[in-house]
Structure formats: C-alpha cells, structure tokens
Image (cartoon, rainbow, N blue to C red; front, side, top):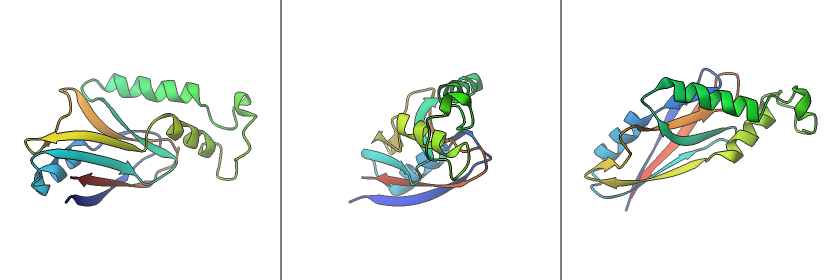
Length: 140
C-alpha cells in the first residue's frame, strides 16, 4: 500500500527549481518508514534531476551546458527541426527532457529519502516562459 500526492511548482522560466523539502515532508507525513519514493513530472518540456544543492554555481553551469547543447530552434544549428508551432524554445525543451528524466526513484529509510549530503531534487524547467508544473510524489 502506498500514498500519492501532487505538488505544483510555479516556474519563472528556464532553470532548476529545488523541491527536496516538499518531498521529504511528504515522506515523513506518509508514515512510511522504509520503501521507495517515486517522483514523476507530468509534462514533456520539463524534467527531473537529482543534483548538488550546496553550490549554486552547479545549477548555473548545468543551465549553461544544456543551453549550449540544445540551443533555441531559431539558432542556425537547429535548422533541421520540424516542430516549431509552439515557439523556438518548445522542441529544444522536448529534447532536453528526453536527455534527462521525467521520473526518479529514491530509497526511503527511517521515514526519510536516502539522498546524499549534497543532493537535492529539482524540477528542470526547459521553457523560457513561466509555467505551472505538476509533480506526482508516491511512496510505497
């Protein structure tokens, strides 16, 4: 038997949005001592990552890397893209999401996700404009 909830993260555009505290609170409040936390984002142009949460330069560098790896559709290097109806950031957002993850699994023990000392759980927003992103949390 498990427990499921959803949280909404309001983004301000591209970037990493940490929600580790919300996930930890959900696990603690669920009463689950041991199990597995599953985290799932219900969108195709955003993703999830577990990443360092101590030095903000890590987030800055990750964002810069992905912007360089997958530039906007109006960049000359992206001329091969066909899907352009939703703006120059949409198809690149789908590519970035495909390169990362839309779900994560984290072991739970002692009613806590077993994240490392410097690990945090992040929504990785790939679109340039603000969005409301739904994250499903399940513990069993």
